[in-house]
Image 1 (cartoon, each protein chain N blue to C red):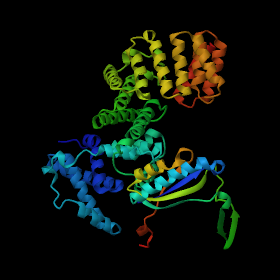
Image 2: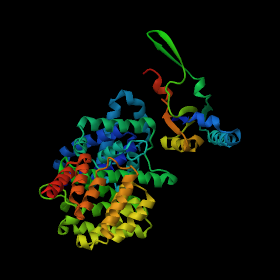
Image 3: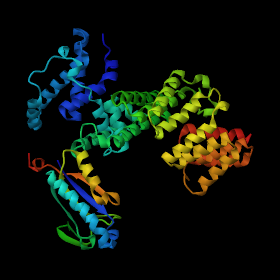
Image 4: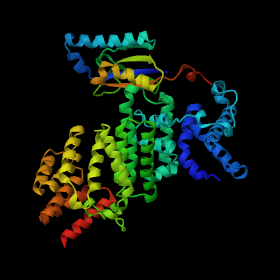
Length: 409
Length: 121
């Protein structure tokens, strides 16, 4: 017997993608799919699952939609038009092959990640429709009230409908920009799961898993896009450190202090392989460079064996591709490790002198760490306190308090 | 669907532009309009006179209030518009991106309410 939960997890995105294409309406597709599930819950345990459950679900939902449109007088015209467009005879699901319904997920992904929607809406809509997460799950993951998340989804779907956002893949000339937008959404989803300080740990792990699953899907559906594979590699390499990153007491553990035996070897192997493939295929963007840096860390058996000089070189390239003071801070830390702490401090001085990043806690935190290594305790304490004032993430704040306590004794 | 492409730019900068520099830009606007016309996508459009010529009218408590100037003082001013027919937002955005002012000002893309929808049910 097919497990409906597993089936939903694996298939709902693809089924919904096709239904939206057939019905031309997100809400109608979602509602009729829900009805089809209800029917499946009643029928499948008694009559057995159909031979092709996906096709069964699509055609059943389509019939539910036709019924619904017939009932709804206001949509009468649309219904007539839709019935005219539908094939006269709809085969029962059992006799349909996969070829009846091509994979529409790519158009769903591009529609959900359309730049005319704001980032929050893109993320929410992707998780809801492509990944099949419930509104409750998404709101729990992002720590917003369910009503707020529901409203965000309603507004996004309304904009798609009212502004005429097309349900389809972008034209070739727009593909690079649009793909970049999709990759950003994936990375936002991943980071929400990876970096979030509070909230349900289980839900957060789910976000990382979904982002990785989406990246894999995108690699399959849009091959020859090395930057997608680079992002997959980056996420796998970061995810491989998940268990070592937080101690059993829920405290943040810095990279150099992590128990590397707790890193996920399988994810590292795949992440490094993805990164190498992506680089060989010409990926040279922000994800490829960050993945390459993560791979250098992953390849070091101990923190001391890390090839920091290589990491500095990669940060140099990253800064050329996308200049950012945050990346400069990271580079300064790498320089301190690769060459001398004084060199690292000089670089931090330069960043600070420019007056950028005044609210960014990692700048004083990085300086504090360098001063601590140099044994300049009172200056270090001063910087840790400045960092603590700026940090908002609970896990990071606890980490900074711990450091202050250690140095104060 | 019809889309209104609202062209916002810094009209003070535009006014300062010597004719020799403005003329090629007008040429680009003409070329865009002709391309839209050729494809049957042009519905209308025009440059607007500066906001110094604007008058804002409001009725409050049955009384007409007239003020000199535009509805809102903004850094960029509404300087013109295109009304086009486009298959979807992507197509509308591709034309918006070809408007010369897109490179120093901003183009707001607004779908029009279809006429049938405005009729009483």
